[in-house]
Image (cartoon, rainbow over all chains, first blue to last red; front, side, top):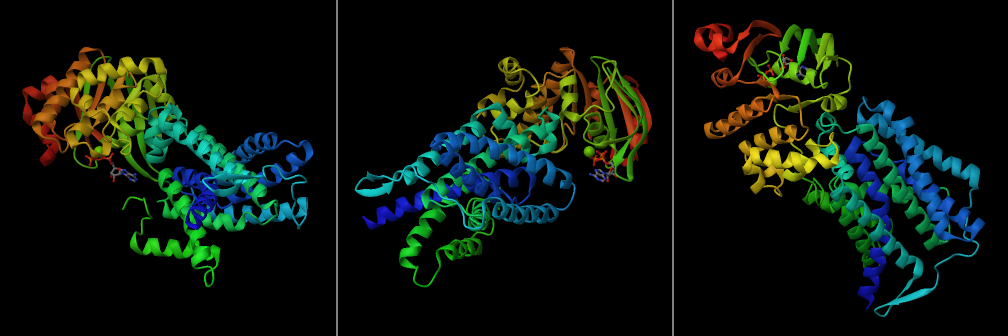
Length: 286
Length: 235
Ligand SMILES: Nc1ncnc2c1ncn2[C@@H]1O[C@H](COP(=O)(O)OP(=O)(O)OP(=O)(O)O)[C@@H](O)[C@H]1O
Ligand SMILES: [Mg+2]
């Protein structure tokens, strides 16, 4: 029973990692940029979630506002921060991204205060039983939300013309363009979708911890980087599996290794172990 | 149909083609031949809008397209089967064809696909296969098929026969002749001069980015030494 409970807890955590990491992997696949500032959108999504919920009492409305707002913010980041640097070596954009992330964290501190915000009446806190294990509604919502959102994304990417065009752009942007794909639009769409997913993760994490604070993006930010490396950089399916695997491994690890290894260190022990055996990541091509 | 006037193109400070002028009438096959590094691919990719035009002009269908972005050139009717094929390797044959027709209304896709699969029945058998795992010949058919999906007025094929078995080369050239019958104008780049001359109406021999001979393919067929002299050992 403990094992099943740990598995569920791990999948909850993994779902959140997945929602964050998917955006990173989309951006990496398209532009070969490590979009560190992505985690800033996750945090801001959390703030919007708490503020709107507290103001209106509706979590659904909060999501409906936070996701498209962060989607548009993501497009704005691409256009102002990355697009002008596309011709430069990738580390230039990486440095810009780190700078932007630090700036965002400091702005959160200035605007929302250093101590963080909480839900006045946190929604979805009642327990639900799943095969004898009790989860919070919010935890269940995290899993269901991730399945629905990422399932929707998989459908979009795999079964629609614009999704096909997006994958073609990842493989060979020049050829995609030669057949009529508007590359600029594909980039906008990817930033929008990835950022909206990160915002949903922010709202969910705020719900699980009943807290948003300026630095809540830091740990997820470097874990998501580890996840996309494990997933084979730019590979959507690999990223998903790596995210869920990391969630589950952390969940078991805190019980069995917790006495000598911090939870957040497990991700990197796992990363190092995998890269020693498969330098291209779990699912990357050699 | 296509007219290049004093076309110069290259890569940054480097100029690969120094002033090429040619004209391809509607419905003809034009072959561009020449040694490695002569500038054939650069020329084709400049027409497609992928290599920097450094001087001169390109007009297509009576319209100056010199400054048109690449993705609007395919809408204008220029499609490309590029050097190295450059298929979307992770995608199925079907998805590659879908991408080929991306610039056309979705409603036209099914009809174009019928036509392409009738031209290359081999692709039909492999429609769900990952294109990266096709044989070299099948990849070339798919590269041509993908370009045809764009319903082009001008089809440009770079290195038709390179690395292919003679039987597959036959399939490709049969297709090219069929396409000509349907009124499509074709610009070929070919290492195998004999093959190119057999189907072409006009030929241009490029050397170090300059045209050294241009004329009717019929003349060149009659006097094989003519072109060989210009091609040197490369022919
Ligand atoms: N991406 C590039 N950057 C810089 N120079 C290039 C590039 N591509 C080609 N060149 C140069 O441009 C010149 C013409 O090359 P191009 O590829 O057009 O020749 P080609 O006739 O197609 O040759 P091949 O028969 O080998 O395909 C060559 O000197 C080549 O080195
Ligand atoms: Mg070439």
